[in-house]
Length: 309
Image (cartoon, rainbow, N blue to C red; front, side):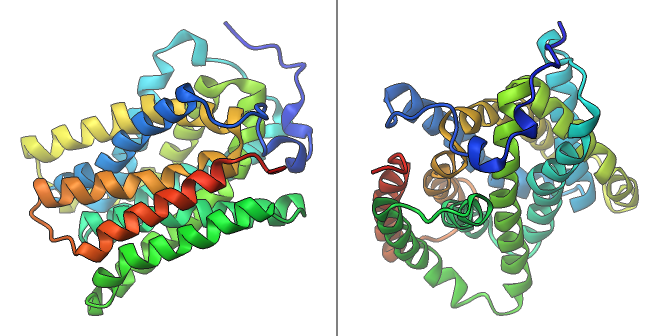
Protein backbone atom coordinates (compact mmCIF):
# COMPACT_ATOMS: atom_id res chain seq x y z
CA UNK A 1 0.00 0.00 0.00
CA UNK A 2 1.48 3.31 -0.99
CA UNK A 3 1.87 6.13 1.49
CA UNK A 4 0.08 9.45 1.12
CA UNK A 5 2.58 11.62 -0.64
CA UNK A 6 0.93 14.79 0.60
CA UNK A 7 3.26 14.58 3.61
CA UNK A 8 6.04 17.08 3.39
CA UNK A 9 8.33 16.33 6.31
CA UNK A 10 11.45 16.07 4.13
CA UNK A 11 10.85 19.63 3.00
CA UNK A 12 10.98 20.79 6.62
CA UNK A 13 14.26 22.17 7.87
CA UNK A 14 16.66 19.70 9.36
CA UNK A 15 16.48 21.59 12.64
CA UNK A 16 12.79 20.70 12.86
CA UNK A 17 13.35 17.01 12.13
CA UNK A 18 16.65 15.72 13.45
CA UNK A 19 15.62 15.78 17.12
CA UNK A 20 12.99 13.13 16.38
CA UNK A 21 9.31 12.94 17.27
CA UNK A 22 9.83 11.79 20.89
CA UNK A 23 10.72 14.36 23.53
CA UNK A 24 10.92 11.85 26.38
CA UNK A 25 13.93 10.27 28.03
CA UNK A 26 14.63 6.73 26.89
CA UNK A 27 12.33 4.09 28.32
CA UNK A 28 12.85 0.35 28.55
CA UNK A 29 11.54 -0.14 25.00
CA UNK A 30 14.00 2.40 23.58
CA UNK A 31 16.95 0.87 25.42
CA UNK A 32 15.83 -2.64 24.46
CA UNK A 33 15.60 -1.79 20.76
CA UNK A 34 18.98 -0.04 20.84
CA UNK A 35 20.58 -2.98 22.64
CA UNK A 36 19.15 -5.50 20.15
CA UNK A 37 20.29 -3.33 17.25
CA UNK A 38 23.75 -2.95 18.80
CA UNK A 39 24.10 -6.73 19.09
CA UNK A 40 23.48 -7.16 15.37
CA UNK A 41 25.53 -4.13 14.31
CA UNK A 42 28.39 -5.23 16.55
CA UNK A 43 28.40 -8.67 14.96
CA UNK A 44 28.59 -7.09 11.48
CA UNK A 45 32.36 -6.65 11.84
CA UNK A 46 32.73 -10.38 12.44
CA UNK A 47 30.60 -11.22 9.38
CA UNK A 48 32.63 -8.78 7.26
CA UNK A 49 35.88 -10.39 8.39
CA UNK A 50 34.56 -13.87 7.59
CA UNK A 51 33.14 -12.79 4.22
CA UNK A 52 36.49 -11.27 3.23
CA UNK A 53 38.16 -14.68 3.49
CA UNK A 54 37.11 -15.46 -0.08
CA UNK A 55 35.14 -12.42 -1.29
CA UNK A 56 36.53 -9.07 -2.40
CA UNK A 57 35.59 -5.84 -0.58
CA UNK A 58 33.58 -4.80 -3.65
CA UNK A 59 31.49 -7.96 -3.49
CA UNK A 60 31.01 -7.64 0.28
CA UNK A 61 29.97 -3.99 0.03
CA UNK A 62 27.62 -4.50 -2.90
CA UNK A 63 26.31 -7.82 -1.62
CA UNK A 64 25.23 -6.55 1.78
CA UNK A 65 23.23 -3.58 0.43
CA UNK A 66 21.74 -5.59 -2.45
CA UNK A 67 20.67 -8.44 -0.18
CA UNK A 68 19.32 -5.99 2.37
CA UNK A 69 17.36 -4.05 -0.25
CA UNK A 70 15.89 -7.21 -1.75
CA UNK A 71 14.83 -8.42 1.70
CA UNK A 72 13.02 -5.20 2.60
CA UNK A 73 11.45 -5.00 -0.88
CA UNK A 74 9.71 -8.32 -0.21
CA UNK A 75 7.60 -6.57 2.43
CA UNK A 76 4.54 -4.97 0.74
CA UNK A 77 4.47 -2.05 3.19
CA UNK A 78 7.92 -0.99 2.03
CA UNK A 79 6.87 -0.31 -1.55
CA UNK A 80 5.85 3.31 -1.89
CA UNK A 81 6.68 6.06 -4.33
CA UNK A 82 9.09 8.88 -3.56
CA UNK A 83 8.31 12.51 -4.32
CA UNK A 84 10.62 13.97 -6.98
CA UNK A 85 11.84 16.65 -4.60
CA UNK A 86 13.18 14.00 -2.21
CA UNK A 87 15.28 11.89 -4.59
CA UNK A 88 18.39 14.03 -4.06
CA UNK A 89 18.10 13.65 -0.30
CA UNK A 90 17.62 9.90 -0.67
CA UNK A 91 20.73 9.75 -2.88
CA UNK A 92 22.84 11.67 -0.36
CA UNK A 93 21.53 9.56 2.52
CA UNK A 94 22.29 6.38 0.57
CA UNK A 95 25.83 7.51 -0.23
CA UNK A 96 26.71 8.57 3.31
CA UNK A 97 24.60 6.08 5.26
CA UNK A 98 24.86 2.81 3.31
CA UNK A 99 26.98 2.66 0.15
CA UNK A 100 30.01 4.56 1.43
CA UNK A 101 30.34 2.84 4.83
CA UNK A 102 29.57 -0.61 3.36
CA UNK A 103 32.52 -0.33 0.99
CA UNK A 104 34.83 1.52 3.38
CA UNK A 105 34.47 -0.95 6.24
CA UNK A 106 35.05 -3.87 3.87
CA UNK A 107 38.23 -2.20 2.62
CA UNK A 108 39.26 -1.26 6.17
CA UNK A 109 38.91 -4.79 7.51
CA UNK A 110 41.43 -5.99 4.96
CA UNK A 111 43.91 -3.92 6.96
CA UNK A 112 42.70 -3.82 10.58
CA UNK A 113 41.15 -6.37 12.98
CA UNK A 114 37.37 -6.49 13.27
CA UNK A 115 37.54 -5.41 16.91
CA UNK A 116 39.41 -2.23 15.98
CA UNK A 117 36.85 -1.41 13.29
CA UNK A 118 34.06 -2.02 15.77
CA UNK A 119 35.68 0.14 18.44
CA UNK A 120 35.95 3.07 16.05
CA UNK A 121 32.15 3.06 15.76
CA UNK A 122 32.24 4.58 19.23
CA UNK A 123 33.04 7.84 17.43
CA UNK A 124 29.59 7.95 15.82
CA UNK A 125 27.80 9.72 18.74
CA UNK A 126 30.39 12.48 18.94
CA UNK A 127 30.52 12.96 15.17
CA UNK A 128 26.72 12.96 14.95
CA UNK A 129 26.34 15.54 17.72
CA UNK A 130 28.87 17.80 15.98
CA UNK A 131 27.24 17.43 12.56
CA UNK A 132 23.76 17.96 14.05
CA UNK A 133 24.90 21.12 15.83
CA UNK A 134 26.23 22.38 12.50
CA UNK A 135 23.03 21.55 10.60
CA UNK A 136 20.68 22.94 13.24
CA UNK A 137 22.94 25.83 14.25
CA UNK A 138 22.30 25.08 17.92
CA UNK A 139 24.82 24.31 20.63
CA UNK A 140 24.46 21.03 22.57
CA UNK A 141 23.11 21.27 26.12
CA UNK A 142 25.59 21.17 29.02
CA UNK A 143 24.53 17.60 29.83
CA UNK A 144 25.08 16.50 26.24
CA UNK A 145 28.45 18.27 26.11
CA UNK A 146 29.50 16.45 29.29
CA UNK A 147 28.36 13.15 27.80
CA UNK A 148 30.31 13.79 24.61
CA UNK A 149 33.44 14.68 26.57
CA UNK A 150 33.19 11.55 28.73
CA UNK A 151 32.47 9.46 25.65
CA UNK A 152 35.55 10.89 23.95
CA UNK A 153 37.68 9.76 26.87
CA UNK A 154 36.13 6.31 26.60
CA UNK A 155 36.87 6.15 22.87
CA UNK A 156 40.46 7.17 23.52
CA UNK A 157 40.89 4.38 26.07
CA UNK A 158 39.20 1.88 23.75
CA UNK A 159 41.37 2.58 20.75
CA UNK A 160 44.71 3.51 22.36
CA UNK A 161 46.25 0.01 22.58
CA UNK A 162 45.34 -0.83 18.99
CA UNK A 163 46.16 2.52 17.43
CA UNK A 164 49.62 2.68 18.97
CA UNK A 165 50.57 -0.59 17.28
CA UNK A 166 48.90 -0.20 13.90
CA UNK A 167 51.80 1.12 11.82
CA UNK A 168 50.99 0.28 8.20
CA UNK A 169 47.35 -0.34 9.15
CA UNK A 170 46.77 3.39 9.59
CA UNK A 171 45.06 3.52 6.19
CA UNK A 172 42.46 1.04 7.43
CA UNK A 173 41.79 3.18 10.51
CA UNK A 174 41.41 6.28 8.36
CA UNK A 175 38.90 4.44 6.14
CA UNK A 176 36.88 3.49 9.19
CA UNK A 177 36.99 7.06 10.51
CA UNK A 178 35.70 8.40 7.17
CA UNK A 179 32.87 5.84 7.37
CA UNK A 180 32.06 7.04 10.91
CA UNK A 181 31.89 10.64 9.70
CA UNK A 182 29.63 9.54 6.84
CA UNK A 183 27.26 7.85 9.30
CA UNK A 184 27.07 11.11 11.26
CA UNK A 185 26.00 13.06 8.17
CA UNK A 186 23.52 10.37 7.12
CA UNK A 187 21.81 10.22 10.51
CA UNK A 188 20.70 13.82 10.02
CA UNK A 189 19.29 12.94 6.60
CA UNK A 190 17.51 9.76 7.75
CA UNK A 191 15.27 11.44 10.33
CA UNK A 192 13.12 13.65 8.05
CA UNK A 193 12.85 10.89 5.44
CA UNK A 194 11.72 8.34 8.01
CA UNK A 195 9.21 10.76 9.47
CA UNK A 196 7.55 11.10 6.06
CA UNK A 197 7.88 7.71 4.39
CA UNK A 198 8.29 5.35 7.33
CA UNK A 199 11.25 3.12 8.14
CA UNK A 200 10.53 0.32 5.65
CA UNK A 201 10.21 2.45 2.49
CA UNK A 202 13.09 4.69 3.57
CA UNK A 203 15.54 1.84 4.11
CA UNK A 204 14.37 -0.01 0.99
CA UNK A 205 15.07 2.96 -1.26
CA UNK A 206 18.34 3.75 0.50
CA UNK A 207 19.54 0.19 -0.12
CA UNK A 208 18.32 0.04 -3.72
CA UNK A 209 20.10 3.30 -4.52
CA UNK A 210 23.20 2.05 -2.70
CA UNK A 211 23.12 -1.16 -4.75
CA UNK A 212 23.25 0.87 -7.95
CA UNK A 213 26.14 2.93 -6.57
CA UNK A 214 28.17 -0.14 -5.59
CA UNK A 215 27.34 -2.33 -8.59
CA UNK A 216 30.54 -1.34 -10.46
CA UNK A 217 32.63 -2.29 -7.41
CA UNK A 218 30.81 -5.60 -7.17
CA UNK A 219 31.44 -6.41 -10.83
CA UNK A 220 35.10 -5.38 -10.53
CA UNK A 221 35.49 -7.62 -7.49
CA UNK A 222 34.26 -10.79 -9.15
CA UNK A 223 37.70 -11.71 -10.46
CA UNK A 224 39.20 -11.46 -6.96
CA UNK A 225 36.52 -13.61 -5.30
CA UNK A 226 35.90 -17.33 -4.96
CA UNK A 227 32.97 -19.34 -3.64
CA UNK A 228 33.34 -20.74 -0.13
CA UNK A 229 30.41 -21.59 2.08
CA UNK A 230 31.44 -19.74 5.26
CA UNK A 231 32.11 -16.36 3.59
CA UNK A 232 28.91 -16.63 1.52
CA UNK A 233 26.79 -17.48 4.57
CA UNK A 234 28.44 -14.62 6.48
CA UNK A 235 27.52 -12.22 3.67
CA UNK A 236 23.94 -13.51 3.63
CA UNK A 237 23.59 -12.88 7.37
CA UNK A 238 25.22 -9.46 7.05
CA UNK A 239 22.97 -8.41 4.18
CA UNK A 240 19.59 -9.95 5.03
CA UNK A 241 19.53 -9.57 8.81
CA UNK A 242 21.98 -6.79 9.55
CA UNK A 243 21.58 -4.44 6.59
CA UNK A 244 17.99 -5.24 5.68
CA UNK A 245 15.91 -6.05 8.74
CA UNK A 246 17.84 -4.46 11.60
CA UNK A 247 18.84 -1.32 9.69
CA UNK A 248 15.13 -0.75 9.10
CA UNK A 249 14.59 -0.90 12.85
CA UNK A 250 17.42 1.56 13.38
CA UNK A 251 16.01 4.01 10.82
CA UNK A 252 12.74 3.88 12.78
CA UNK A 253 14.62 4.61 16.00
CA UNK A 254 16.36 7.61 14.41
CA UNK A 255 13.03 9.05 13.29
CA UNK A 256 11.57 8.64 16.76
CA UNK A 257 14.38 9.72 19.11
CA UNK A 258 16.48 11.86 16.77
CA UNK A 259 19.89 11.57 15.16
CA UNK A 260 22.05 12.41 18.17
CA UNK A 261 20.31 10.19 20.70
CA UNK A 262 20.06 7.23 18.29
CA UNK A 263 23.79 7.57 17.64
CA UNK A 264 24.59 6.42 21.18
CA UNK A 265 24.40 2.94 19.69
CA UNK A 266 28.00 3.73 18.82
CA UNK A 267 28.84 3.26 22.48
CA UNK A 268 27.26 -0.22 22.56
CA UNK A 269 28.58 -1.68 19.30
CA UNK A 270 32.26 -1.78 20.44
CA UNK A 271 31.34 -4.11 23.31
CA UNK A 272 29.89 -6.66 20.91
CA UNK A 273 32.70 -6.24 18.40
CA UNK A 274 35.34 -6.69 21.09
CA UNK A 275 33.71 -9.81 22.55
CA UNK A 276 33.27 -11.46 19.16
CA UNK A 277 36.77 -10.50 18.08
CA UNK A 278 38.19 -12.19 21.18
CA UNK A 279 35.93 -15.25 21.32
CA UNK A 280 35.65 -16.03 17.60
CA UNK A 281 38.67 -14.50 15.88
CA UNK A 282 41.12 -14.77 18.79
CA UNK A 283 41.89 -11.05 18.83
CA UNK A 284 43.43 -9.62 22.00
CA UNK A 285 41.83 -7.04 24.32
CA UNK A 286 43.74 -4.89 26.81
CA UNK A 287 42.35 -4.13 30.31
CA UNK A 288 42.33 -0.42 29.49
CA UNK A 289 39.84 -1.16 26.71
CA UNK A 290 37.42 -2.66 29.21
CA UNK A 291 37.68 0.55 31.23
CA UNK A 292 37.06 2.48 28.02
CA UNK A 293 33.83 0.56 27.39
CA UNK A 294 32.49 1.50 30.85
CA UNK A 295 33.45 5.16 30.42
CA UNK A 296 31.94 5.29 26.92
CA UNK A 297 28.68 3.81 28.18
CA UNK A 298 28.44 6.52 30.84
CA UNK A 299 28.94 9.16 28.17
CA UNK A 300 26.31 7.45 26.02
CA UNK A 301 23.76 7.63 28.81
CA UNK A 302 24.30 11.38 29.22
CA UNK A 303 24.05 11.98 25.47
CA UNK A 304 20.73 10.11 25.43
CA UNK A 305 19.12 12.75 27.63
CA UNK A 306 16.92 15.15 25.66
CA UNK A 307 18.54 18.42 24.57
CA UNK A 308 16.72 20.60 27.15
CA UNK A 309 18.43 18.76 30.00
